[in-house]
Length: 353
Image (cartoon, rainbow, N blue to C red):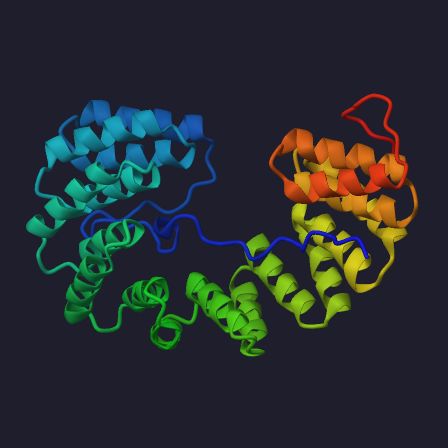
């Protein structure tokens, strides 16, 4: 039988910085969320700054306001003003460093975190931020040193155990990774990212606990596409196709532009249920949502090939190769259908459906 390309695997976290909440200075709490439009809030804040131009907290507040609308250049300028007005505030260094880190400006982030440690040696959070940087750079020993420094100050830090779990996972020690991540959720039952990582690790072990951990993550974030997708993949790979497809349908409700859900639904129909006709519709949906989805074009070609529609199969294989010229399955598929008599008179990016 013509091979279909396996459905796409688990989504991964791209930035550790997104795992924990932004750090705020203890003596400068964030203002409560406001329903006022951005322009009104900005105008009111600027009036206060004019009246008190030396107040560092006002510049910090405006920096956060700019960050809330992704006006990062202005946010950086206000963090500079806040730090110039209060150079001993470790919290401002942490917040600016966190913003640098999110923008992948790692050296500048490191400098701010190190300065925060110097300003507030008893605060654990700068050590955790440095640990994230070391972990991203795959400096596992240095990352663990920073985590342990933070945990010595506060043994109940869930984020510290979470980062330990990441370090052990990166080092290939699954047992210790699971142990640390379990401690993280014991310390903070709302730590979404720790539940996700526990799900991934247990899924890798084909342990049914993976489903429980993904569902725990969904209790925290019911509309998380990441958690829904990971759960659906686990169900799909462990013989629960109906539940998997129901979960993919839920993803489509949450994110109607998500191409992974129809692609994997098509894969289940193509490979698990041997129903290429139904699979066609799902792969078409995936290519409509993402015209550069070369695996979806290829698998739709496989569905056409199994239905004996060789010219349509050849056209889809050609689209896959146009997107990804080194995609061997599509090249092999094209050779296969040509050998069976397929003919495509002219390449068309819009193959027959």
